[in-house]
Image (tube, rainbow over all chains, first blue to last red; front, side, top):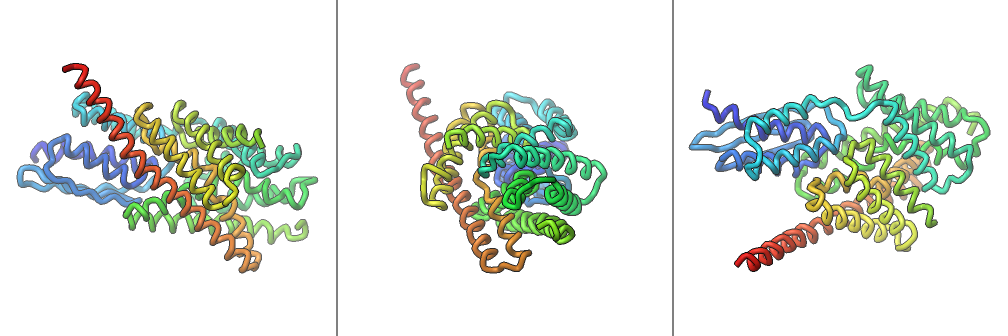
Length: 253
Length: 150
């Protein structure tokens, strides 16, 4: 096996980390292209979609083709920044091939960034801020909204840990949140929606929705459509969870 | 109303922590996100245009600071647009849909689509402008440096 076969794994690894951590498709493709060109490829063709990357590199009348399947996806923007840094240094010849490979391999197995409790606190704080933005100014609904944010994050983490499928966990979380919100004492009818919504912001696919439109306008039709349908499915799942809770506790509405 | 600036900053910073954004981009995103919130809610009275202009501002700030902080623009755009994305509208539209109120649901869906398109459009326009701006800024300073060295 010639050594190029091995060396072109480096751009693929960088692309894989980017895709896992939720980078946009054009960034993945651009990074792979730049790193492969820096390695000496004469022609680079990359096709990245949400669930995998295919690329072929031409070098000395030889074509090397790779496929990477990506199954897990999350949002880890710090890792995207780090891969970006490594790729820039590598393309400027400030970083050797071995060092780049070592650093990327470390990033690939990097653990999730924070403890569940800290994430839950951040989510509670976010829910608090959002309910203030939704003009919720009474102390009791604010407190319930903050609680909702706290438990939403904890629940998502716990269900992920138990390896519950993503959509089921979204359904369960929104169901339990809606149940809890309806069962909170002395919560005015008009406040219920906003208390629930502040916490549901953690689950609502607003960012994927916007990213999908950006990708569609960019010309990445496959990933744009895939992301759009993913966002739609999770919206419907959330609605189903909330609806189930509202149906069960119909008397309270 | 003035306090909203602080609340939006807090919301963006919290979500930036959840998205695992490094510190300096978090602060930039916080400022641009709260500016965007004020723009879309108070400073510009037109709904869709306000959202588009707010997204444009987020994009401009992100592209302005990305090369200077050596960070990808994604780290500043994604947390900042959290305050603009139509999560609430999408939720309301779905609630109306499951309650069987199809005309309100249709209105909601249209408002979701239009504000999503507005955000995407604003970001794309800012990208078009700022990529050229950054490039000409860089070449300008390189020229200056070369002239000095000669």
